[in-house]
Length: 121
Image (tube, rainbow, N blue to C red; front, side, top):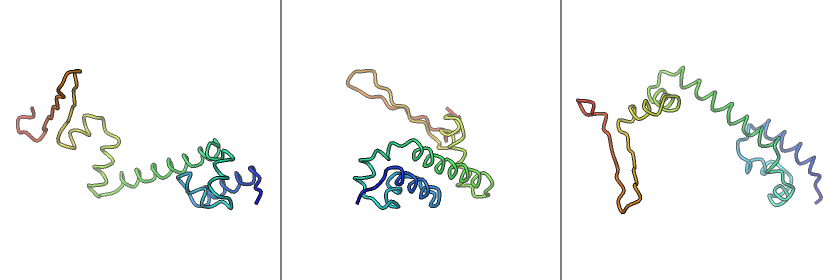
């Protein structure tokens, strides 16, 4: 069956909006063509499709972070803090910092700082 690229693009954009899709593979499932046609027409590289998928991902991430912020659930709040905190704050929440150093020689040196020690060293 012959497909017009513009029609496939319109159908893809409608499916992304209607079903709140995040991944390019999900888009193909809502089209009347097969994957070969989709990729052969370069629709996987289409900026409109990519932008709409990204927008859906961002909208959901922002919504989830807002829910985590408003939640009384400590696990959600810790997850949010790890996402929005500085690297030092995230390591502090985890309880340790691991740092791998390699000087080009035979050995790799792993430094672990445990924040749970009483003296804080």
